Image 1 (tube, rainbow, N blue to C red):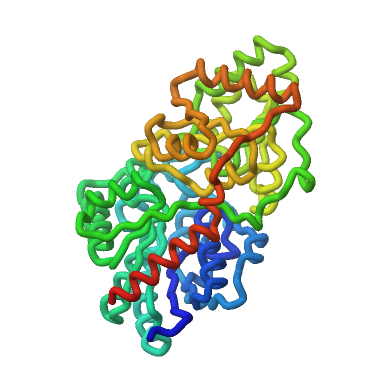
Image 2: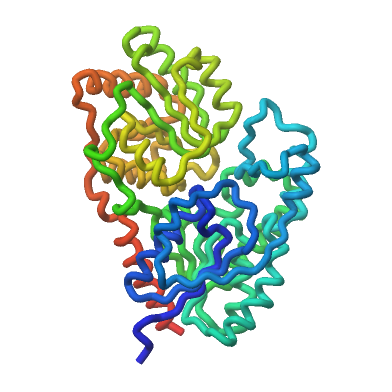
Length: 440
């Protein structure tokens, strides 16, 4: 009979004190899996270049989770010197730029990153990690290996040790690989593009199972690797993070909050035009409107807001820790949710989606009307998503929200969101891992 507490090796680049979205999924899974009796060891870099740090996430580190680390070399020191970035300044993800125009050096660095650092800038950690983990697993065997990406170098580390150690391997894709929203911005040569696809297929074909966040991603990976066993476990929310109205009162002003990085692909010029037109129609709306932008905002977004004449209606906060973000979500009158307007838009279901739902505030959602996000929102609140080009519906939604705000009756009506609690999702994941172990 198998031991009651199976052992997991999790290979992840992001781990506390890392902040941002990349760390949330497996930090929460590890927390609840540990409570269910799983023994988890996390392998992560000793000296990573994180885009942000967040000490508030340390509270989710279950005492039974073990962490092993080795040094990593990343080329960001050269990147910073080449582009004139200050030594202590963080490197943005997804090519978000707060400068008006990317410098030639920055564009050249992007080309180098896409064509020479394949699959990503953490590639130099792959071989040392394989060597280290082979020895570690020989001395401390586990029942299952999990890799989570991006960065997808984590999957290549897992691939290098899983077969030799005869350990079942689950490859978790929080985001796509060659179908990620900024893939085309890498300016890849034909050879580099082929190498990315080859590595992606090799990982998918080699892993014993794949884990993805939604139906669209599942279909995309079925095309890449038809024989792979693919499971869906979406992102979610942690009930222990949520605050009540008694703890966080609603904003006095009519606040519309966007939480997280605001990249050019999330910019919807027609939204700002719609808000501007409603401001012109209704002076009280203009007086009460406050657009809260929490996180890094690309210059393209700020330029669009200014062109719409809304520069006096914005409040910009560069970065907040996760516990503070939860408070902002709960206090805002309306939460703004925009799916990146890219080729993978139909499959976008970020962790923010579920945290917005848990905040129990009305959501203004913009994205493809036939995507996974649209289907989710229809399921939990019956509200349709608004297409990127439908300014008429944007204005109608704003007028409706503002009227309810004036009547002090602006509320959310979310149903069945308990299905997306991190604890419930971890139970689903526990069953997948158990099946994977028992199949070997």
